[in-house]
Image: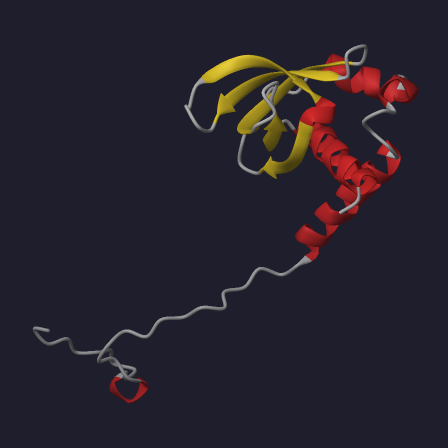
Length: 154
């Protein structure tokens, strides 16, 4: 994956995490140059320092802490479904009103919203069904009658 594509992917995940109120799993290059893994919930974006103010769970020591994460040091991201982060409405409004201010991280935010909408439509349009079945041992169709099924001790 090229650097531009990687940054678009990271920006897309950060955008979705902020707007959907979810946490991100990230791989982050720390000051010492080693790769650190965190789960983060984003509070705010500092556009001057190109960083995120987050609550983070360090996946090595399992410590919960407030962190400043520099966006250009993030190696990869993955949205964590089933997590909750309070949505920062002020930040969402600022992103909406000042897209140029956040252009270094979010490219084509309108396209991201449309793609999210289409993905949700696709999920909701499918018919739920069950595809896995288990047979109950010692019960056959020929043993079932309109009168019922007589059980023995086993």
